[in-house]
Amino acid sequence: MKNRDALRSALLAWYDRQARALAWRVSPADRRAGVRADPYRVWLSEVMLQQTTVPHATPYFLSFTQRWPTVSDLAAVDDGDLMAAWAGLGYYARARNLLACARAVAGLHDGVFPDTEEGLRALPGVGAYTAAAVAAIAFDRPANVVDGNVERVMSRLFAVETPLPDAKPELKALAGGLVTDDRPGDWAQALMDLGATVCKPKGPLCDRCPVSAWCAAFKGGAPETYPRKTRKADRPRRHGVAYILTRGDAVALVRRPPKGLLGGMLGLPTSAWRASPYDDAEAVAAAPVAASWRDLGAVEHVFTHFSLTLRVFAAEGANAGDFVWTPREGLGALPSVFLKAARAAERLI
Ligand code: SF4
Image 1 (cartoon, helix red, strand yellow):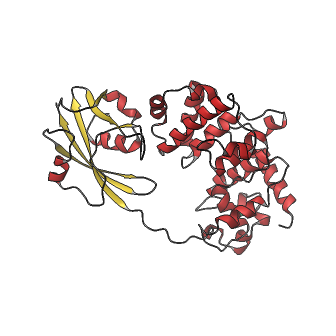
Image 2 (image 1 turned 90 degrees about the vertical axis):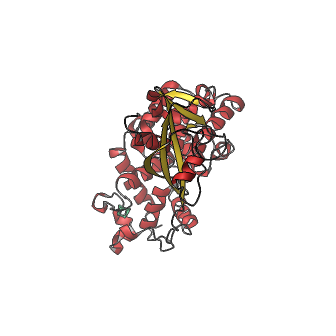
Image 3 (image 1 turned 60 degrees about the vertical axis):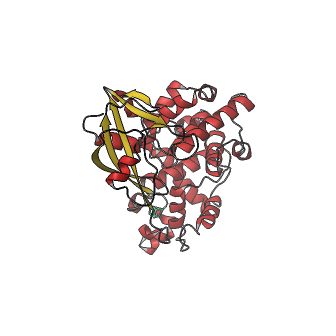
């Protein structure tokens, strides 16, 4: 790109003035004073932020780093405790990968994160994006850190007409052309901030944008129409039933199998999740124990690959069954889909 250095200077100067204050971030001023980012905190934040917003992830980040200040502390945690602490962040495979990675760093690397993209990529559960982000932000390596925000910024800066997802390699290459050895960590974070606060998906704030002078989509007059997209196939819908079985003040939970969706988490007992809805008789037949089940309606939940309509049935007083009886006040740690179902039972939590 022509004037690449001028564009870089404009964005970095903007970042110096108004970088977001994030719990895991070392400010540009502190970085200039020689403060280094803690790779553990950078890695943890990047894992949490995958498909989770900053406001949602921040309290989890603060709680995790208070309970487990180092990667070795995290590596020593019991799987169940970690899953409970992760509840509400969703995408539970990430929590399992988090633990596998922490244990590899603690066990194989004496608690010290590798300082190259390749070394980081070799850790369990660390993908190309996370490796690049940690290499750039924690170790100032000139890594090309490209997430959805950066793809959007590139598609607009260069008015890329190829629709997503086909455009991904092109957008990555364009982003790579802007990376240099000068302040790679700040550059990655400046682009993230630009995408999150100015070059927003629906309403880009071009009048406040530090790089509008270089932006082809802005010049074209319709920046919000980028990135171009192919029509997304509709998410399939599945149906299931969740069962709220109470005994006094306690609610019956089950530990889900270690593999698969919400693997290893405690949850409400459910029927199988399938393509067709359950009628009343089927819902009662699929219950974990025989009881006087009453219909409490249904809740909706959206997972990455499908939407779920979950009918909720409740009953009291059953003893049979292999359950983890949990006081009502402990239900707040359930994954969101079960929290929604539990909330359908009036005053349960
Ligand atoms: Fe995004 Fe507008 Fe800036 Fe272009 S000028 S990068 S569209 S905010």
